[in-house]
Length: 149
Image (cartoon, rainbow, N blue to C red; front, side, top):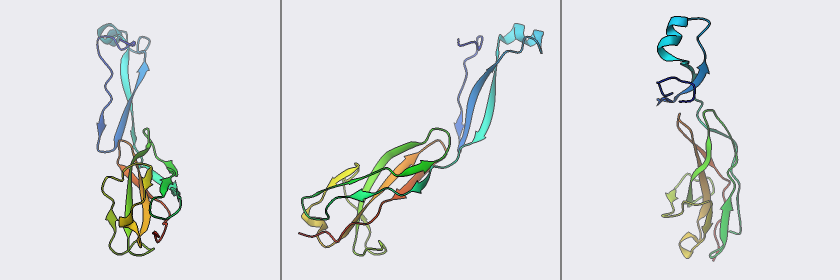
């Protein structure tokens, strides 16, 4: 059992904390304990750092009905295995600052999106999601548009 005696290592994830098993032999330090458990499983506890977008995703393509847009994932930091690009959501808004009438585009949850007539006159951007045991981080792409016919 991977040198852990009759016990299996357990990785615990709780409220953003990441516990990782470390194998250490206790024979020299505690012979009695060695007889009971074989090798000990010790844990190093570290606070997982929320994924943070350090370089924004870049949306590209021609903002025109029928054209394909795409986005990069950008650059992220964080700990405890950050899964970059774990989700995408394309959005529209009525102004370039994305402060009015911001709506998610239904079903537009991939790194690419084919513009339709419904987006004509609107501005478009993509949100890139990255996750780890601590939380979900969001990165917002640049804005494209207004979309033309």
